[in-house]
Each structure stands twice: as C-alpha cells, then as structure tokens.
Image 1 (cartoon, rainbow, N blue to C red):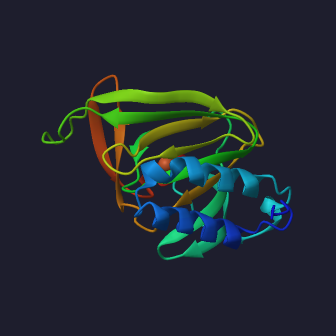
Image 2 (image 1 turned 90 degrees about the vertical axis):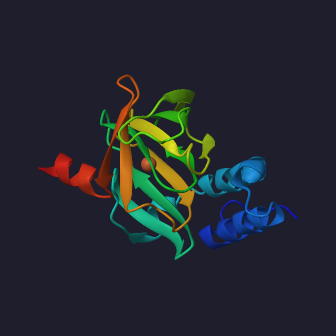
Amino acid sequence: MATSTTTYTPRQCARDILAVLATHDNNVVRATPEIIPHIQTLMRRPDLLEMGTPRDSAHTKDSIWLYYDPEFFILISHPEKDVMVPPHNHGTWEAIGLYRGALQYSRYQRQDDASRAGFADLKQSESRTLHPGDATLLPGPPNDIHGFTGLTADTYIVAVSTGLYSPVRNYFNPEAKTYTPRSENTWRATRSR
Ligand SMILES: [Fe+2]
C-alpha cells in the first residue's frame, strides 16, 4: 500500500533505510538505489522545517534533528548562500537530499594510499547542482570526501548518516594535493570570528 507523503514520518524513513541497509549487510553502496527513494519521499513533506529539535552543525546553520539515535540520524540544515565549504571528510557515509533552494555539490575519490601525512591525490567523482528532490550518497572512507556551496538564501538539505563522525576532519586542497586535519568544529569557529 502506498504511503501518503504527509504521513511519511522521519521515524518511518529511518526504519525503511535501516531495513534496506540490513538487507544489504550494511553495504551502503549496494543499498544506495533503495535508500534514495525513501529520502525523496520524506522530502515531499512540506513541513520538515517545522519539525525536529535544534542541533549544532560544523558547516551549516539552523540545523535540526528530524530523527536521532546514537547510531543513525536524519537531520535538516541550511548551507549559507555563497559560502564554499571546502572538500572535507566525515569518517562515515552520508546521504543528502536537496529540500529547498539549490546546492553546488562535489564528491571526490582518493587515489593515493594515504601513506604520506598531508598529501592527498583526489579525483572528482561528482560535481553538480542539486535541486529540490535530488538526492545523492557519499560512500564511506576513503571516498567520504565532499564540498558544497549554497546557491540560494533558502537552501536546505536533508542528511542521513551514522553516529560514526570523526572528531578530526581532513580539509583538502585538491589542486595543491594537500590536506590539513582539523577538529570537527574548527571550520565553524574560524568562520564566526
Ligand atoms: Fe560534510
């Protein structure tokens, strides 16, 4: 039976995605084609910004939890217009969907073996503008590297991930083939000064 988009709750979305992951032995890459439609169904709700509870965010503003447990979450957040968040990693996979506005989004794959501190040879694997209803999935390490820029004043994304965020993130300069480790919230603290 089809689920009404107005009754499709963050909890049901979480349950559906976790069931898909279990079917694929938690292989998120194999599960991606089945995860994306659940996020898109949730994003058809017009009232996501009126739900949830506030959270701190490393790279975005006005972030709220829509669903949270220590191992899995769904959040919504607001990348600021024209603020380029440089390529960085998370330490885990992350699916994102574009709820409102527009987002320039890039993913990268690591080509070196990570044996040299401060050196990273990245290849861009995706670069596109996400529009409302679009969704994409960032795989786990070592290819959990992405950057983005909000393109409108009302850009909001839905993000789905695990509780396994690394407390230290690497921030990459693909042209110089370098990276700098920084604690999770350093980028935001630097921006707010
Ligand atoms: Fe990120």
